[in-house]
Amino acid sequence: MRSVGVSLVTLGLTAAVIGNAYYQKKQFYPSVVYITKSNPSMAVIYIQSMVLVLMLGKLMRKVFLGTLRAAEFEHLMERFWYALTETCLAFTVFRDDFNPKFIALFTVLLFLKSFHWLAEDRVDYMERSPVIGWLFHVRVAALVSFLGILDYMMLTYAYNSTISKGASVQLVFGFECAILVTMVTNTTIKYFLHAMELRSESPWENKAVFLLYTELIIGLIRVVFYVLFVVIMVRTYTLPLFAFRPMYYTI
Image 1 (cartoon, rainbow, N blue to C red):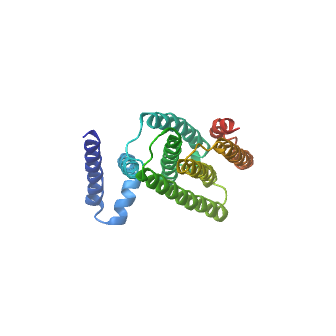
Image 2: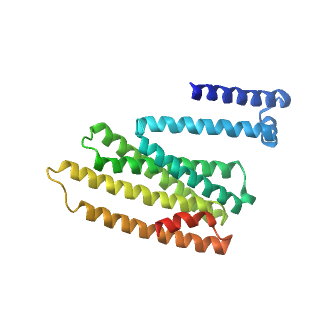
Image 3: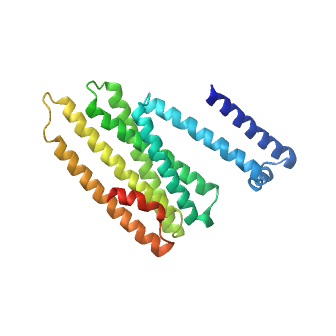
């Protein structure tokens, strides 16, 4: 009920802002310009956008994951606050590029990261759960496939934008998408290894070795990405402090 109330309030404020702009300007384009030039109006639009993102996140969580376990929710909150802090540090580096598109990119990035973390925790849960139904496999396979497609699309967009327009905030966005590609690859491999063990009648003794080498190889790839990113950022902008914690953790 609280979520419904917040959604209705933000929807009413957004309708009031749009109605007021159209009432004063009488045409579409001048109304849009008026809204973008008004800080209170843009604040309402930002809040409405965040509410829509949260609603989409709840819908995706319901479709792909069902009910979150307590451990999954705690891990999500812990990682989310770290990611939010690093995003705020990134804002200081790219303060000259600060605009609605910039905010939208990092909002999408946080959104994707959250579901990558949830997918990783859900696959790890396979090893501890005695019973795994067909719905679990369908949801995990669909989520991993969906995230992989989105990561590839975002990475391609960031690469093409950087090549055509030069170095910009797309460097950070593309790098983060590359890290997400390694995450979804690692999650997919772990899912197949767990699924193969579930199909076998006896415990698979070599699975731990395969998991170890998978983590090692993926971790090495991430370290290479982080080192390259830091070198490029130092030569292009400045020292990327927001990348140090995850780089240190990966190493």
